Image (cartoon, rainbow, N blue to C red):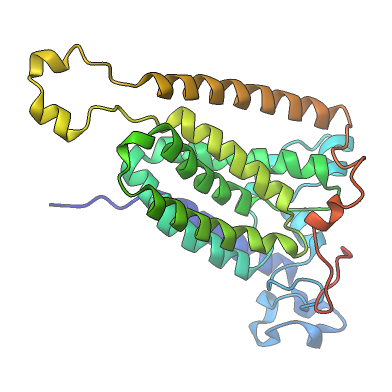
Length: 292
């Protein structure tokens, strides 16, 4: 028996290629103080100094050249395409490692259960949603690859909620998801990755999980214990599933519409929030939250 290779691996390969190209373009060793670069023996692929980028990656200017998003370029300069391109960018190697491991664990599982098309849609739309929320609440440049991965995590929570009666080991599933989510969101305290983008991606994935990952409720016990003629008249989905589906679809449509209208009308989600900038970056003695 030939087991098909999960196509979600293609997304991982694309992200790795984009990261390598980003580091090549960055070329830290071309700086006058090139000795401050991390891993200067890597030549063009050396990382920015830790104080500039604590997760071993490129400079902010390079990330913007590669398609990162921020409020000014998206709204004022009419470069909405950045909301999509930022989904494929990583601020640093540590972020790339984190998202890759999560994709291998979560992405491959979801693809095996629901197919690549639905998982690919959740991944891309969640990354876009994270970019939108980030631009609303954060004026600094950010990338949204972690938002897309958090979307897959959110989708697993959504799938757990709408298919609740199927799972017999709910506590174990929830605990595993919480651990993986905590690992991915912790990275939001460093520069160029803000928690608002992760929250936006997670919530988008959560709603899409309830919409796209609905399972029929006829389990194996019912199928073997119930005659085929009787099974034909049994409802495929429970009432609570349909209610959750409609609520999720309404929230998703309304949330996306309101967020996009607010963003392109120049509204700022953080204008009445003096502490929201800490979600973009928490300054420490090891790194600065100033962007080059």
